[in-house]
Amino acid sequence: MAQAQQYSVYGGQAVIEGVMIRGRHVYSVAARHPTGVIKTITRPIPTWSVNRFRRIPFIRGTLVLSESLVVGMRALTWSAQVSSGETEEDEQPIPAVAMAITLATSVVLGIGLFFILPLLITHGFVDRFTDNSILSNTAEGVLRLGVFFTYLALIGLMPSIRRVFGYHAAEHMTVHTQEARLPLENANVRLFPAAHPRCGTAFLLTVMIVSIIVFAFLGTPDLPIRIASRIVLIPLIAGVSYEVIRMNAAHAGNAIVRAGTLPSLALQSMTTRPPDDGQIEVAIAAMSAAIEGDAQAESAGTGAGSPPDLVHRGCGC
Image (cartoon, rainbow, N blue to C red; front, side, top):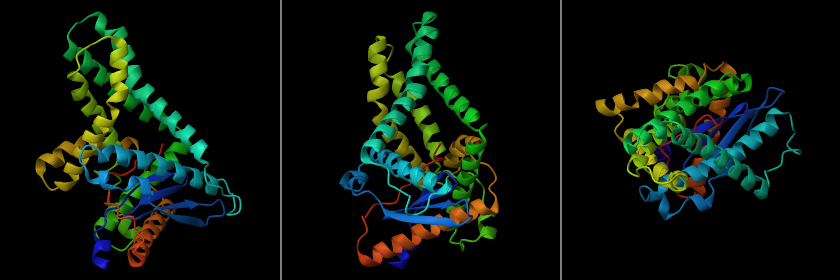
């Protein structure tokens, strides 16, 4: 049991004044209350996301993404309640209907901003000057990357998001520390960089690049078909992108792989900020709670048996 626990892979995301860490059987959230107290919760991984499909390549990516959205929303909701000063008696789980509406809205806005908008701009301007489908799809991909970078730059100007980016760095540094098998202490966490190759930001960048390749094979059919393809093929793109991240993580020591991850590591300079000691303390509390929760689940035989994820959840913004 101890050996299985030692080699578990952990990832997470930043939330409001806190950090969520996803373990093998549980996920934990730690957030700073206005009184200065660090509050933590530990919850089991949703059972619907842990099944035989979790081990099937190109399918598991969509399942992991779905779990990330649900768990991330729950973590964000709880951390918002804690950071606003609510007591334990006031804290309420997000209703299922509200969860569904919020997630659906987030997905629609994300697809509209990062997939449909670049397509419409390309169709309205680039396609007027060329009939070359490769050029058109490449231009759309470049626009998609531009929208993505612009979005990150703009939200990074918001003070509240900059706080989240500090927690994002603290989460990465704490994961580095756990992977190095060092004691979870501030001094050890400070030894590691704010960027991590399994960051959700890297996953999003991979999605943008993979989408360019996938859509290039579709040519330039009528606009309604092109719009539909940008929606229908998202699970495929997510699945391929997840496998790329898994491959990079499994061959992290390879020089070519390391070179290929440099752009995503550089991009994380936009989604991380140097954390203060208090933010690192919160990240350590979340990691410690996840490790303890996994150990208890293993000991009690109640673990969901979920394989460890190789993708962090990102900054939660």
